[in-house]
Image (tube, rainbow, N blue to C red; front, side, top):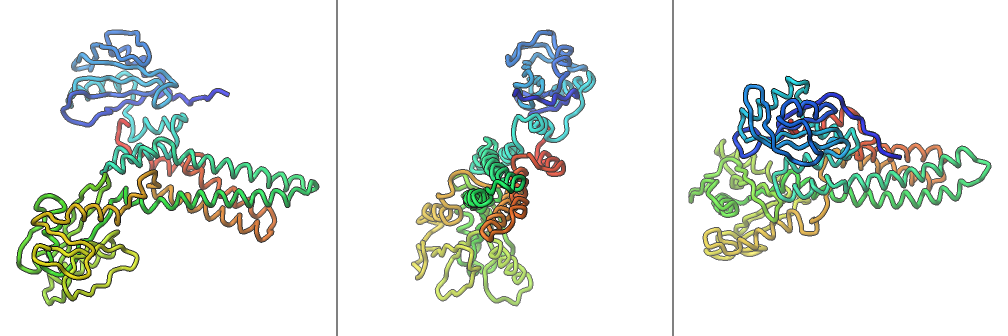
Length: 435
């Protein structure tokens, strides 16, 4: 059966490029009447779909020579008729063309409305839309790559595959309930149990990606800690490649945490330079130490500049790299790595160890990066596990049928099949106007 599209007769319009001077600005329209508006604004009335053509474009108070391209429904991003005006970059020209489209019957688009129409018209899944938003808002190469995989329907395809398994299992259970005289219960119970085991294995694999995905999205938080004058700020500056933190031979110079980001193999690492850890009667230094301890508690990785005789307790679950800094002055015992911010010795090895310990090369691939997806998959896993347990305990099929439906609905929140209007609205609020 051919797919039907919910064409929207309301034409929306927005500037699709960044505001301010530039080489080109794009004004985009979508909706059933977009082509009619374009014909009234241009010196030509005939537009061949998917072909960019030159035209004199009417901006009401001004005109511009530009290019126009028409995407015919349903072969467009939104699934509707789409027209783009490519005009010379600059605030005034783009805003004049946008104003003219509104004068001729379009309305200003809301945030993410073009992408929302694409979702509603079946051109992309809800998770793919989130992947696009992640790409747009990315702050590292790795986050762009993860967003692209999500945009490419990787997670949605897996969600649909698991839904199909659940649907088949549920059909068998419901057949047993409808035709108890056929005595198929034992056979279907075994088959559903095997299906639940396979689904749980897949869900566990997906959920196992979340730790790395969260670090991709938020950055790997690294706390640089040690005694006063251990060389923390010097090492911090050396990793950044410039003098961000104040460096002094006077102990206790750093009184507050200082944060900056670096990129290691495309992954963002958020470095925090902290106050030296020691006993102090100075109220200001005490506050700095308190903040340093807070940075340690929230860190994904601790970079510890060890001094002779140090005994520091760190959170058991947080990996620690023990570094002997200022190695040009001598080597300390019990350190994994020796570095000198002044000579550069060990700095490249330190960067590689930061990446391996804080993120890990085994994580290069697809990731679960959205908290919403994590919550939905957790609910699906809980329901699938409950169904499996009910089957193993020999409980009536009515009980595990409900768990199968709950798992199916949870996965539908990822594919978009069962997502609420509030969830959909929240997702498209992440977009800028014009996308």
